[in-house]
Image (cartoon, rainbow, N blue to C red):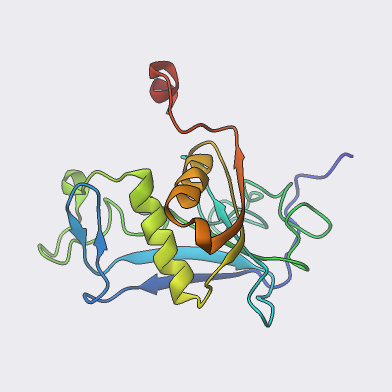
Length: 195
């Protein structure tokens, strides 16, 4: 099947930004704490009445929350436009698809270019080290804020696949299925160098 790379308008595609107050800090593996965490995300489709059709898509190192449709900054197709869309594996007519920019990312979620509430200046090089587990804890905060208890699936490739594995390890009761693509729990020195 030959599909066009042209972005297709997706019904029900919306973007969002959630800001957590100081009462909901993100505690990192490094023991640092991010207060005022902001998570930029995008959804495709509608959450059904029993909230059982939510799929979390975890992006790779070079991805962002704009997985499908037209990217608002570049005008190019989303990085998974061949997977998310009408009649595709992740169909917004059947699934409520959520994709969040990871913590430490540069597309709206708290990262090095964000303002540190303690200094009033961008974190820059002072931004704390982030682990895959930190990314997943932030995603779990987003899923909670969206009122979703259990995800139908968590899906991702490469670094997104690492997040899927972390979800399966940390929150097995919160997901029905894990779809890890082109990833592993451990990497060789060569793979670390590639990333």
